[in-house]
Length: 115
Image (cartoon, rainbow, N blue to C red; front, side, top):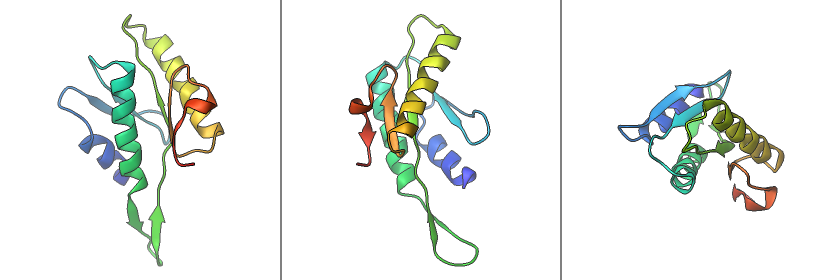
């Protein structure tokens, strides 16, 4: 499953972007010169592409995949602050029902994704 999701992340990336594995099942997409709204739009495209994956199971049927995404942006270049804000947004996405994209600083009422 991770290979399929990684392919979606890679295919959704622009030439200047850097997709990476982050933690066990986590992935990151570094988007240089992209503001929070632009990063959110790209993340939402990635989320919907992942949601559209249908992976054949070895036994029978298809595996459906969803993703929770946190989005952050930094013009100051503070890596630790950016990671912290983005992780916090990810936790909001996961706690508010999963399969969502949440911007850093957003409350659970400002999530995009499956209802």
